[in-house]
Length: 92
Image (cartoon, rainbow, N blue to C red; front, side):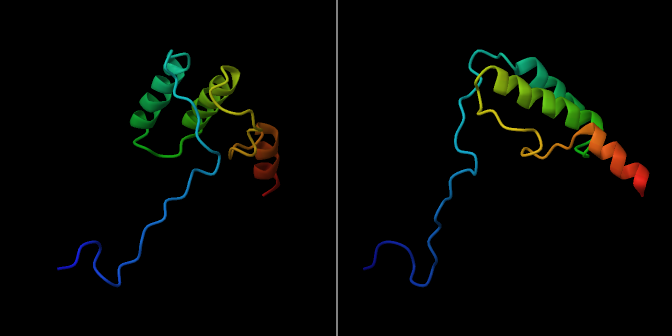
């Protein structure tokens, strides 16, 4: 009788998140912005809408301001400067 996994199956090695863990917002300091973001996503049916991206940026800023995540530039978090975005679209 054999116990364990069947032979030939690969094992799953979990990988930690790229930016590490972060504390939960137990005090609800950023909850209003989070609710606005979720409502925006529902309104646009999950599409990548510019309005929702700005709310997401505000949410991340709130988390950084309340020490719920490490400070980082928004460019590293996937947000472009509005000046850069407008400049590249007018050049096309």
